[in-house]
Image 1 (spheres, one colour):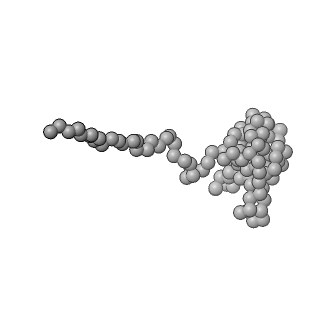
Image 2 (cartoon, one colour):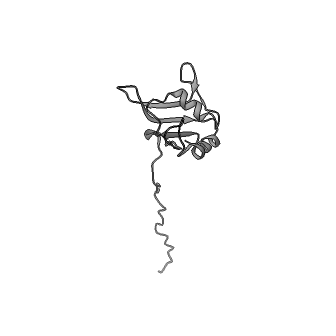
Image 3 (tube, one colour):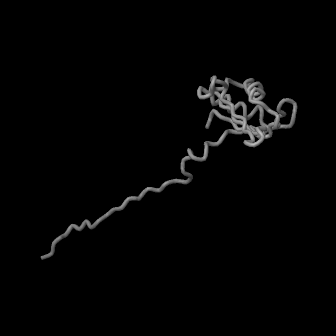
Length: 121
């Protein structure tokens, strides 16, 4: 995912708006049309039971160059005056990964008998 960054080390009080305000300074965040109403494509991971932020988020930019810039500018820098955060390119979701390693197709085969026969009598 060239246009999406994964952020870890965020405070457990962080909101989606906090993340948007911080990360939009580097580039245009993509609009998520699935949201009602449509809004920035930012996902803050939350604990299902408590609803508290887990400290992780993903941000999807319009431009892969902005995502690259975000990894360079924000990684290991304080978030909102707090502790440093980690910013890296996001991995594809587990179900959508291409198989690892190469596939070696069946190879050549070959030959058969090419007997030219020559014939002796």
